[in-house]
Image (cartoon, rainbow, N blue to C red; front, side):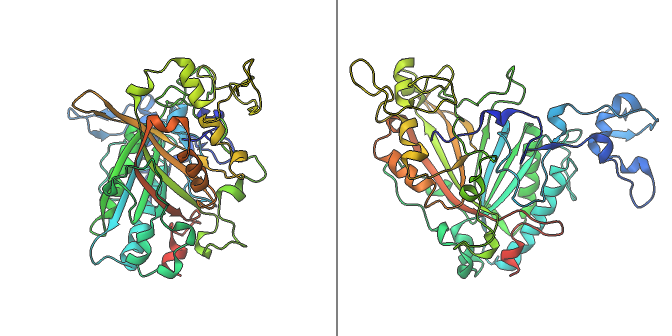
Amino acid sequence: MGDQSTPAASEARMPKQGAATTVSEAQEKTVPENGDPAAGISRRTLLGTAGATGLVLGVAGGAVGYAAVPSPATPLTSVGADRAMFHGKHQPGITEGLQARGHLIAFDLTAGAGRREAAALLRRWSATAERLMAGEAAAHDDTDVARGSGPSALTITFGFGHSFFSRTGLEKQRPVALDPLPDFSSDHLDKARSNGDLWVQIGANDAMVAFHALRALQKDAGGAARIRWQMNGFNRSPGATARPMTARNLMGQLDGTRNPKPAEPDFDRRIFVPASGSNDPAWMANGSYAVVRRIRMLLDDWEKLSAKAQENVIGRRKSDGAPLSGGTETTAMDLEKTNAQGDYVVPLNAHARISRPDQNGGAAILRRPFSYHDGFDADGVPDAGLLFICWQADPLRGFVPVQRKLDRGDALSAFLRHEASGLFAVPGGAARGEYVGQRLLEA
């Protein structure tokens, strides 16, 4: 799972570099071509002003009329109003903080669908993503699931799997970095829940908003692509703690201390493909590579350990995430410190020791995971764990060396089972007037 995890500030809702920004309800009002201002009120403004303007509801709960009066709009809560931008240098959903709800979904192109159909699909998906991330309804056949909700920091991210390029006749444009991941001894992979031609990541701070996006994109796929697999995840909700804190995973451990941070001078070099001077094809400029792993946590076994034993497995205190060598959560770990018996305070096989970048040739990954729980088996054993998502400029220099080292002696491995895996090339963000992947599909 790695000690390179989501930053402690990831749950803060204040705007920051690369994070969701807030758009006021007043800015969302539009006037349609027929010149009727009332008809142009967005669905978010409508709900925000319901108390002041007197929205009339029919007995079935449908809106039957709007009584527009010149009173100020009642704003959405800060969570609902948070908005991420669809257009930009990078795709959304990479550098933003953790979101409360997530859906991961992979598609395969249908028989007979090729490059032309894929381009049309990405065009539809991009248009829908732009609308939904702005808090608007889908352009066609909107389900009203998110009616009245704001964007809730919704992000939608698109990527291409290894098989996509052969399906579309674009093998010469397939990046070398997208070669299949090597086998790891901890793998127990279900092929039906791994890989895929296309990958979509959805994240939001409201479950209804996230589901609305999932349903809209699935409907947009039409006859061009079919679902290969889909996974649902969650994180702690923004505002659930008295102050912004590093998230905890389902093992109860703080999971987000040593992630690379956008403010670091080498962040872009380690996480994003450069616009020039790279072995990657030109269409991957400003993009990144996502490794996706469904990691089941063997919680019954883990919870039998004492708190001290759990801390020795991780190499950090469970209470506050500080390294066993002392200090606070952000204190540098002293790997050479020993106790009175001469033993290393941070055990040699501790997860945090093995996964440190300085113990892996500087390999760095940006972790942005979701927890998951898919019920219990017949014996009451929870099917729960981590939807691990990590970002890097080159997986052969990022995820692979770290995972290989963890595979050879990580104490945490005894309590984990890697059950699904995927690697996806995620192109850079779409400029206004473009759709995601256009520079590949229309080259």
